[in-house]
Amino acid sequence: MHVFFKDLFDKERCELLSKVLMDAYDKGSVNYEGVNNAHYGNSYGIGCLPEYEVILRELTPIIMEKTGYTNIAVENSYSRIYRNGGRLEKHIDREGLDLTLTVCTYNDINKPWPLYVRCIDGVVREFETGVGDGALILGTKMEHWRDPLVCDDNQKVLQSFFHWRIQHAKKIF
Image 1 (cartoon, rainbow, N blue to C red):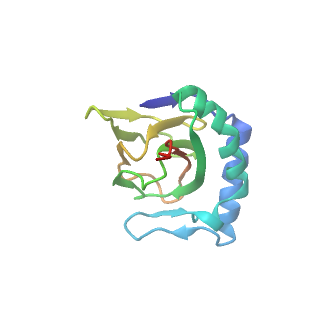
Image 2: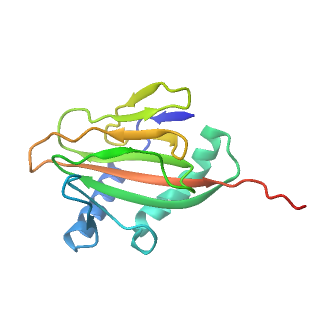
């Protein structure tokens, strides 16, 4: 399962979220995530940015409608600032991040920087998420990644991630 959302966020929402993330960066509230990765991210849990958590909750009915999953629960949001050399390593998400939505809120590199997803059938799909666009995948089932970002040192891409857990019925006996 994968869903592409063209213009999921309008220009104003992208500008607001980008400002919130860059303000957190300026205050030292985001973490440098490794020499080879060249990107920064806010921490899970107590480090989640409240503005993103509000949007996570607002998105939940849309995600239910688009996926048919009515048994989902909000898990968390996370955001990253990618600079020259930054990448998203090939991975599947940890347990509980069953549905993963990535949305680009800022991009000044003037070229696509696609998200690659290995679907359950083994086919690799490429999603070009321009500013405001989103790609929703089964994060714990589908390997996904981005190649290293190639841009000038003063350029960047901001990506926001929203996650939901698929709740399964519990056996009562």
